[in-house]
Image (cartoon, rainbow, N blue to C red; front, top):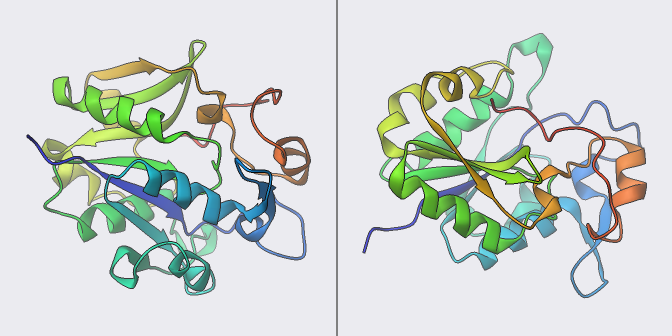
Length: 214
């Protein structure tokens, strides 16, 4: 049986659209049992519950919070993404993929998406067995995670800047994986998103696509 892909949780962004005293990823939302849990911690918990390997790409500021969920060997610390430095989502993806170069594939999951279910990660991983790229889709809307097969390794580790993997997705066949999981569209990007998404995904209507990787 082929080994599963690695889930790469991206947690190195500045969260510049979130206007608050603290980074958005430390803000609490309610977990499946109704307990307040930091956004990053809940995203990682769901990734871990998939029983697939997990790597988190984050900054030195957030690394201690990540370390409460994953082992130190599964944390990749990078400088915070920022337009002034030219760093962005592409750099984070490249760092995570390079850290697990021997994986058969990678699922890219932004850390501000704590409602993505473990079963959704499995569905996207399964789709990678029949194509180079797969992504979760809810009611016809593209979401996350986005999965990449190992054949795309050299292109993924060459990514830089804030465009993410959009150009790679445009060049190769990408399979939509329909899931009954509105969490694939819910990224907590602003104070309003946080207020609407604190208690769960059942009644939350996402206002926009999740952060673009395509």
